[in-house]
Length: 279
Image (cartoon, rainbow, N blue to C red; front, top):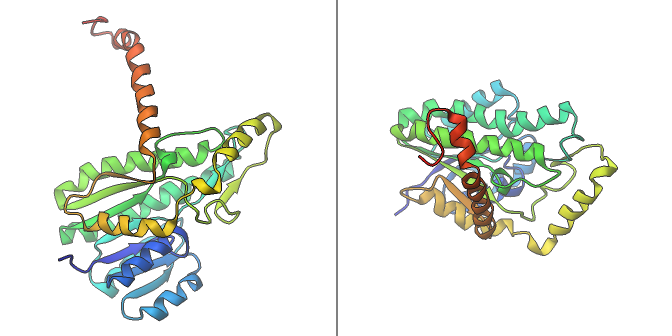
């Protein structure tokens, strides 16, 4: 029998965060749902007055992150599942995106995630248990043109999370990196997506990417709820979990990477200086 869990979810006002918060509450778990606008969570606290706690949080405010995590812990007494869901996209070729937009994207997607991790770890270590779930993306596994800044942020989340998993395993804490494919959330809406000033020389690449993102290829966010519940209930949760039909593409991309590394291995060995190619 699965024990009741207490969740801390960032970016719970909409999208995946909202879906997962609702799914956890509906099965009887407790949830601290955070969002920049807590009005979006009013119906959840009305439906689940004893198990839902809605707190305002902008994850780029590091002090607020620590205060909010502490408030959730005081309210519920423990934290079992911490979901770093808050984030937003950034479109534009690397040349197009100005510095302020780059910094803003990393502040939320990377530094916000790290702040939450650092705020919850002392609690989880004392408990001797916990599960940190960090939202990456297919964009944290495979990069495509005109999304490089967002992809860079998600690649950073991947590396941070992988190291974190090795660091905290000794304390009984699990870490999972979620890598969703395209979903029909409002992620591509203006409020969730930074847009750079376009340069005509990159229009063709933009058009090709847009053509590949047809609405019938997008997943149903509601369908992800059962997967997340299965993940957090697993005795040995995986380090990575893809959501959607990504495996064939990822296998192809990694096969290409391995082929490139192998074809240039003689050069790599010569560059080391301590061994000869073929030895």
